[in-house]
Image 1: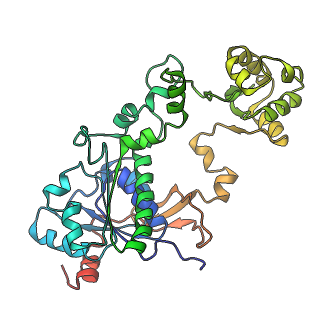
Image 2: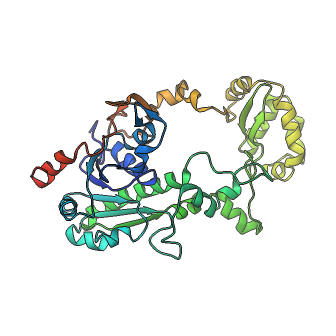
Image 3: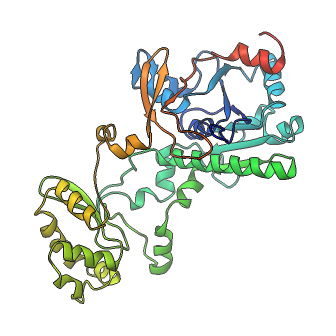
Length: 386
């Protein structure tokens, strides 16, 4: 069973570009699927032109397309369209992230393709989905972060709108699409037929609003940005230590008592304003200056050392460079090498899904050159040369 990846026998035809779709198919590739990336002639995936570049090759593109194969097809040309439809007969999954209606206009929508291959799982990731009044609207990550409510709860109190630092509008859509594909593959084992998966970036943002929706339902007040502070657990935020910021998360009353004992402020445990989490949250404005005074007395490293000893959740605010030397990140192989023939040795994020059925590799295959595998794929799947 060892070194058998769960998607080893799955073939994915990947029509996606930039981020949401390529992120999804990267997950599938990490889990063993053979991903055939279908790209436009001459230009390919838009992200091939996105910096930063290493020896003229996009590091952005490498980070999302490692281990995939690339073939060039012009789906507006009859010859290439015929090749594409022949491939559809042989693959398990098609993933696309065009604006809704694009594939239908080419005669390649789900209703068309399921006639060719009833077992096909057709996964579409788009800004607003394949139904509803916004369906045909254009979308980028920040558009859906804003429209989905995420930006309304991000940033400092009273500050201007703030985008989440990573493109979570795209990434969450990619994650949900990968989840849907895996569920559909499982269901196909039972039914023998494929299906269409429709994931919208906007829907994904609403889905991860977490307790913001619950808070609104209860209070009837739209949640606002709170900086690093947790809306319903106190104290639970970033504090300024003697030298730099540190995260301290006192998640329940038992941890609060332990924290107070560790800093020799036992009187705070019985203080009626702070005796329970509900009271600490209600009296946040009273507790905050007390916490600030306490935390300012030691360095961030000292707090991490001392609070770790007594089991209180605490941690640094790492800059990206520190991830490269973090022992936990290293131990979990969350930064892996890609040996690229053009860019050389490139480090990308690893696979966070650890499974007992296969070893987590410390390296990945290179991202393909544009059309690198066209001839190989045509020969293998269609039994002919170009």
